[in-house]
Image 1 (tube, rainbow, N blue to C red):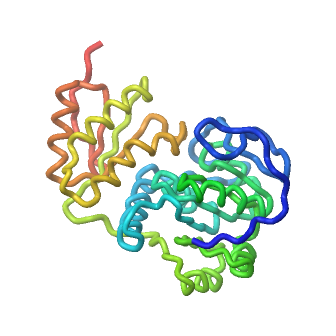
Image 2: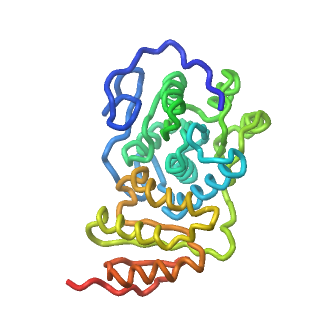
Image 3: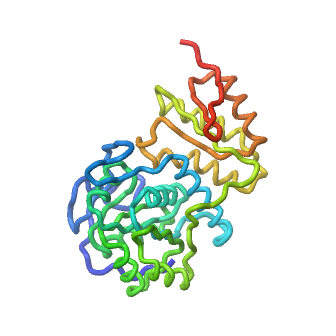
Length: 298
């Protein structure tokens, strides 16, 4: 990852607990806006923001984790992901990147769509110029901490400017509105492309579970049970445990009553047995098919 100097913009004030950047609840100095708390699911009419399925975010996360092991030999802390276009795949990429520990920059010229992502808690910052994006990214990359920055700009022009200024992402994900030629240049300079369709490992199934009440407490318990059922000898177990622990913080309340995990066939019976033993009020799908789980009494 190579980041040029961010320029001569003013210093920012304030702090967020557990983060190295300022809390700015509305558009403040230098056009920065930070993640809010308003949440909605599905289509947002004003900005035509389409949320990806939770399952899609999880699969992109697993793909990122495999790329990290293959190309970097470790996690994505201190690595930069660039995404052009904040469509459903773009949202999946930046949210999955944050769960994986990466810093993400996404460029989109539809202001309402970018603001919608912020309102839904799907990105950390919205900025109006590349200087401020670089300032935030440099601060968090030095600390190997995840952060997602959405830049209100034309994706093609943004890629050109990145190349002109010497910014070299570690990973790239280019949507239909992104500049393919510019992305090719970034790839030729060493950026690793994130595959949009990465086949699932053989012998696995995707489990999705949801609860109707007390999601914060119950999903935490179910995630703990899922983590206990994972095979410690599998190469992807560390990444899957990270998903269970970190995903709720990045997904926010947009997916507040649901969680999912790709599991090996041999792991699933142990997970279901644990659910049966605790008789939690949960609905479970296995590759889209319902699995009967005993309901709690009362």
